[in-house]
Length: 308
Image (cartoon, rainbow, N blue to C red; front, top):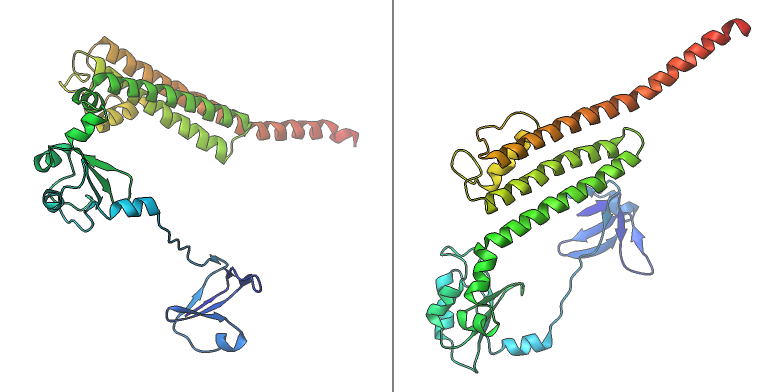
């Protein structure tokens, strides 16, 4: 194969770059001269000026981790949760902790790793199983207890309405703040261009996202369902409701329940309508300025005509 018509970085100080490269099988055969390019080849790639770099390959070992892993339960290659649990169950006891590593649950057909499943095979001592990418830990209840992570803490992060409401409030504040920053940048452009148009679109979308967070907050803290149809709605449903309302297309298939929900929906519709009208007015005004200047210039030329 010959790669040609590009910038090929060789990382060789004596010849930093070439425009063509000859590849023979799995090896780099070298640079290409006039003779080689004249040869018939079924595999010639025109790079079109693109850059080619050598593969970045890194091989290293974290020695303490590698040493500890010699006594861990090996979970590499487990094709299911059941297989991983079988290996844990059959592992010899070494020390007060059971350690393991190498599991990857992306393709497990029988579910993700859970503390309940791990408790069934090892409940008399803490267990800590490290994922293959070292980004997750699979632990049992004994390990959680030693870490001070009780059932109340777990329920707070998985089922707490207070946490959900707090996150929704933070989301509303952040989207509003980002919208203000982007709007300021679009206004600073001083003209209608790609940046100001993109900024206006982003602000419009962020307004919808802000009300989406507010509706989520109201659905969490409210004592009654948010929608009159008797449901708080999924996030996707509230997303649909928010942007249909913002675009002043009506409420869609769902309507809010209660005075607060009605007021928020009306406020969002008004903001969406005012925003669109304001943006259109600004665009028309700024695009009309060159026409006004031309008209003014034409009148000046007309007035100066008899005197020249």
